[in-house]
View 1 (cartoon, rainbow, N blue to C red):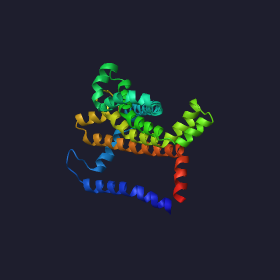
View 2: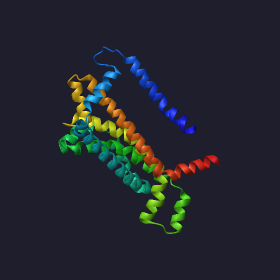
View 3: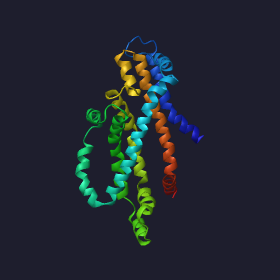
Length: 257
């Protein structure tokens, strides 16, 4: 019953919103706001397997490549900066300066440096997504338990062993929080970069539909982006449960106590 109740809570609002959209737009004659049934019909006609291979898979590849690179870079730099006050004092002004740049502003410069290929889109995604991971990693590393740090020092646990079992493990809840914050940013930046510097991809295709006044097809692309976001969010939750099972178990035990 508890599982059924949680499913009803999770699905209740989306179902209500879809029903409101369906009945609220039924019979719409507005060219720019077609009915949901028209959009769903265009979705089936537009996003065939061939279209998915040509336009969606390249976007997903760029999204995952940029996102994973941002996570790896953010964790590596965050651990380095969090462990060393000297490095933190040295890099903090530069990091604050770079963090102030809106990632879409870099698209023209990235086009000049790397053309309109995959490297440009991946670079924009990396630059925009690295900051939540980096900042959360720094704070997670700095907040590690001093008692555990002293224990490692007493038993002479150093190097990669200490980094893996103490530093990264202690910071992992905040690292995951940063990675969760970076995921929707990656989707947004993927779309923006493809609209500005691409000749294929999901963002490019949606923009072409808009320019060609293919409005139902344009909305079907927006709907597909939403579905991709939901699927990626669910996959992230599964990965989080696997990576942080010990942490959630520890918190549950503390609440029971």
